[in-house]
Amino acid sequence: MLKAKSALRNIPKRMTKLEDEHYFIDDIVSTKNREKRKMYVREGKRIGYGSFGTVTQSYLSNNSTEWLGPYAIKRVIKSPKVESLELEILQNIKHPNLVTLEFFFESQCITKDGGQIFQKNFVMEYIPQTLSSEIHQYFDNGYKLPTKHIKLYTFQILRALLTLHSMNICHGDLKPSNILIIPGNGIAKICDFGSAQRLGRDEELNTYFCSRFYRAPELLLNSKNYTTQIDIWSFGCIIGEMLKGQPLFKGDNAKSQLEEIAKLLGRPTGNENRANEVQDMQRNLHDQKFKRFMHWFPNIEFFDVDFLLNVLTYNSIERWDAKQLMSHEFFDALRNETYFLPRGSNMPVHLPDLFNFSVSEKKTLGEYYGLIVPPSD
Ligand SMILES: Nc1ncnc2c1ncn2[C@@H]1O[C@H](COP(=O)(O)OP(=O)(O)OP(=O)(O)O)[C@@H](O)[C@H]1O
Image (cartoon, rainbow, N blue to C red; front, side):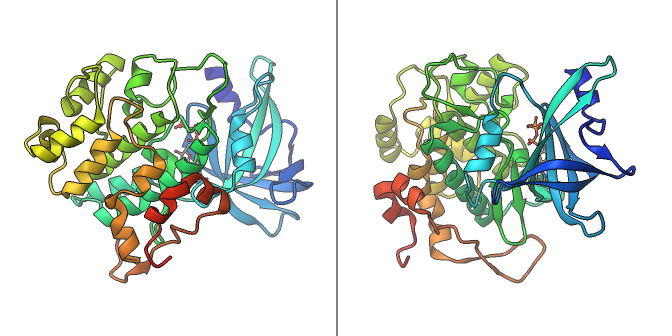
């Protein structure tokens, strides 16, 4: 893996290197019309160096004088056997809350010991901020993320998950650094489909994926029967992080990760029953779990605690899915008021269009559609 990583720093061989800063490729595919064309590529600063590849801020040109961009180019090693689900998702699922792929191309490079590495290059729209950097911007300066912003970004994450999950695809690595945001207009888009999996096939499922702090209890326990609900758990961890300014559960290994989770949720009894839980909660506000949530997340409303309880649930069947969560009172603030105040601004800005659901989204939402859109829509 180390060898591969150092090889990735080289300019790929099938591209003709013209000058230090740009090179020529003769078969770049546009996702708009699937046509192949010749283009120049100029790679700039490195913006991500993940476990699977590199991401650089880049520009493209038809003539090497006028440059289009910036774009983000993610370069990953191409497996000769496995077809890339990452490319399939980026190419085929167009959604306002999934990062847009503009072009892609293949390349190859030579390692120091003379081996050959084949690579895929995804040329995506460039979105300079992540939810992770946004959380830091606030908390490092002694502020909390405004509740409206939390609701705005999380609603869009759920909208993206609704579409992925309706295709039985789990993202598999949801975390704040994989949520790209545009703070000025409140847009959020999920990126990084490198760990995505299509579930429901009879193949042996991998349980070792997803960054530990965001890994669902069923994955920590090595269950082979997990569902797309593992992303909902990660989603809950993201909200927790937006509220607290740091990862909600920070274990050093799977066992201590489960212990951290138990500090908030209590120990799993093996017989969690959501219906009873709600009854208990309504009957007795001093319910232990509810009290712990209130203690961990002071200053949030009753309904917001209820929302979190529905997300951070051991039993993945009782954990609410994307459409149920989108219909929760937690998001009423987005249905009732159409403005928000971007960071560092005192001019309210119109919320992005959150409810312009496509035909297939409406079909997936079914009876929930009426509960999710604002009354006048
Ligand atoms: N379209 C984009 N625009 C701007 N930045 C991006 C874009 N895509 C990815 N990035 C940045 O690059 C980082 C790494 O990208 P990505 O997660 O896709 O790669 P990875 O190798 O799977 O990384 P990791 O192992 O950290 O998940 C992201 O966390 C994000 O900060």
